[in-house]
Length: 140
Image (cartoon, rainbow, N blue to C red; front, side):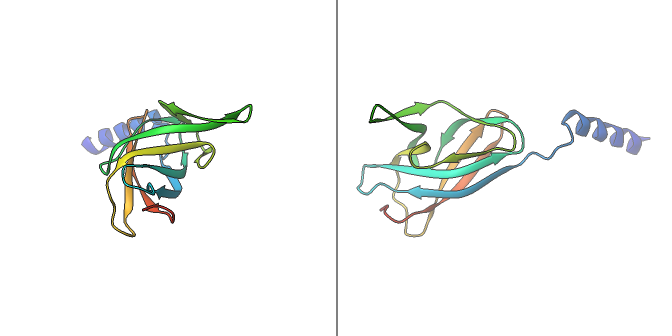
């Protein structure tokens, strides 16, 4: 009887969740350290979520602060704006790259050569994921 009840409860929970596997795919995670001490670093990546979600926070144990920014151009003038969140439509790849969405890394701690740079993203769904960004040429 207990096995039947457990199986029924498991089936009910799976049905309530839509029976889908929730996953997050991150590609091309690259971190560019500032060229000088005290400068600002930048992180780029591409992210795909199997469910509609939203990035609502970014942090790193290796920096004072991390912010989501977007770049734009209007009438020949470049501008950058801080964002509080970024939508992740189900199954769509969202790109954080030069000239668009990106992460600004303020007060990054000095990293040894060839070290990865960890950044945690907090999602509206409650998930918290740590992305290991690889260092790129041109940083310190």
